[in-house]
Length: 68
Image (tube, rainbow, N blue to C red; front, side):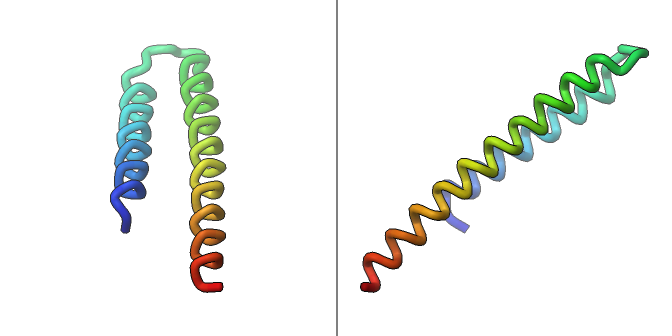
């Protein structure tokens, strides 16, 4: 695993842990805060997946050019 991948994985794990703690400690009875945090976390994961896919595609293209 590359250094950049480990950093991204660490950040995502920290965000997941923070979100879980926020949801657990939330005293909102109606679940409004939980919904907001969940939506934010899902958006974060989606954007992270897109960025990781872009980086992966660039790396694959670079490797293909080097091999050619």
